[in-house]
Image (cartoon, rainbow, N blue to C red; front, side):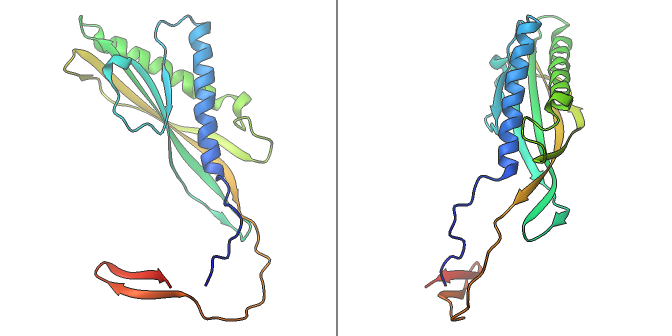
Length: 198
């Protein structure tokens, strides 16, 4: 048996949407920092796994959480795709206001991100009509401030956004079946049954 799908599988829509969310956040937050003359500047990352470093002071990380499909056909599936926008902020604890400064900064950036993502100007995240069927900020969660070893108070928060979209796949036109003999064997191994291509 040889592979049937001969075309290169393109980047999936949930990947494209995630990249767009990160780009929009980076662009619009940077613009707001300029318009509001904010002293601290946020670095925006995509799928960052390295822990937040207190010396960074302010960081935003966008991550894909998963998709749940509720409508299926041979041509496409559709449903909500969930993404996280995590914001980290620090405030020096040299005085009693360190935690308050951190929490205030965190809430400001969470609020800006929420506004940007829910703005009607980004209802389709910049894609043509029909690609996105809805964008919804579902939730904002904030953790408690933590006193770190370098006397910085760190707070973090998470925005959960849901983007409803369609995933398409090409329809297979089919071909005449000449043989049902395959070159794949199912073998028993110590870890379970495994497909082996002969």
